[in-house]
Image 1 (cartoon, rainbow, N blue to C red):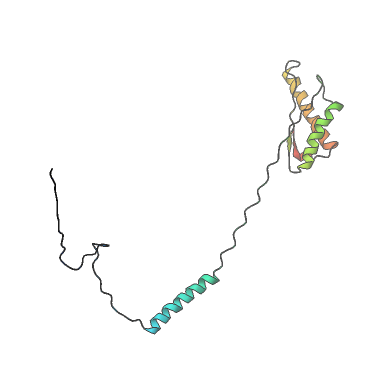
Image 2 (cartoon, rainbow, N blue to C red):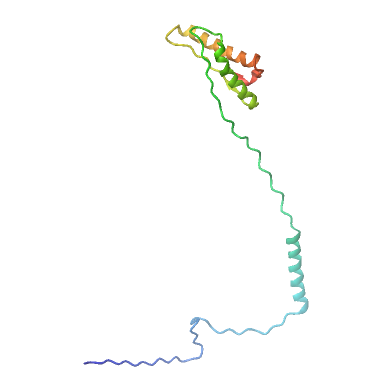
Length: 154
């Protein structure tokens, strides 16, 4: 059997060795007393700054502008007979729905678009028919339900 025993000794020369801070150097502080007037002037300055903080008033925040709430839209369809521009009585409920919506939302506007069947007449006849149908719906909203004309686009 072999046994190995090691013994070591470490010795540091000098008295400045510090385990907590090996790079620290000792520093001597002067025992200096401050004059009473200097301490009073510092305290006065502290009190002055504290008073400025206490009396400071932040400016009132600017209120946020009101945001318009989005209004739900509505679509309605009014049907016409073949080559007709008069509104059938059973289609009045569709116009009434538009009128009720526009009365509920007084800032709303409506676009009225007329259509005609492509396969039945010429392009010129159908364009005139579509315009007349849209105009009839607009007139009904204006005259029967009291909707302002400037809220309608035909």
